[in-house]
Image 1 (tube, rainbow, N blue to C red):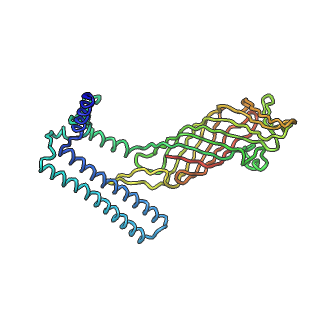
Image 2: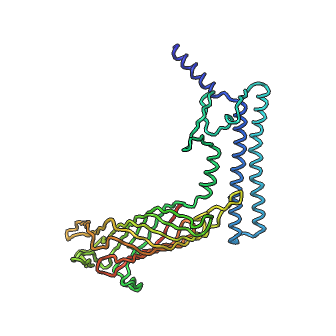
Image 3: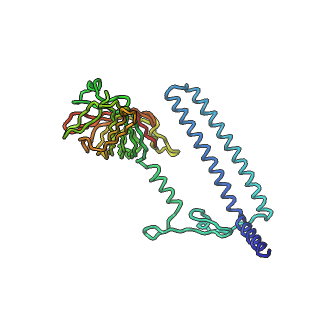
Length: 369
């Protein structure tokens, strides 16, 4: 029983020490909350103003309506700031009263110690972390944060995107678009899927419209032959031959790893910091990309399914390169609005050796910042 009482006393003492407050720290907390309230509401107001300006640009609203909406938004957020700050001011008045009545203590700190940058507290003890740089000088945390904002976030000229695309495949023979009309492959059932990662680098030092986009992607290309045909390797050639059974599935799939590069014109309206500095706002409007790609095949397989004369379902998986060219290269382009666009890709190399059959892909593309 005594041990339990001792533990409870120690526990309560620890809580009491950890909860002890001082006047300066509480004032600092209140001032930070007021600053956060003001910043948050101003940021929300700025977003609404930008949205109203975009509506005005596309003529969804008139100039008079825009001014009215801006005024209403400003009054709304001003009231929120006033209400929330009033609550914090009430807390400050109580704090001052407690200080006058001796209910809360003060602490005496030098200017260097009063900074809360790089410090943490346990109970009544305050610990300060000091880090030396490569020149054996102590790091100034506030200046370091300011430098990061100035050199890093504001001047960041490269962003990253996750890319997903899907659509249909077919082939051109002898580079003739008319060959699509008599293609040996099903147009709407020959699908492709692409997953990748890209980096988008601004071409100018300051915020602009032109970017260089590059990355890596993986493609799953499927070709489904018409008229119950399938692919048969015949020496150095690959032929399309009619199967003796009625096929339920006949699909040739080849997987590629590509390295695409594009010049992209992003017509998104650039933003602006409070000090007038321009900043990039990407994937917010119309985008146009023109470029090329190069890569290699990771593998090729043919899937065949049918039912034999006894009604038994037969599934075949054939692994071979089917005389396909290992390396591939070509041209690609897209036109998009925000994250979604129309995508076309054309292989300049022949799909199969000893042929002039080239793969073409059409589909939709999603670039997520």
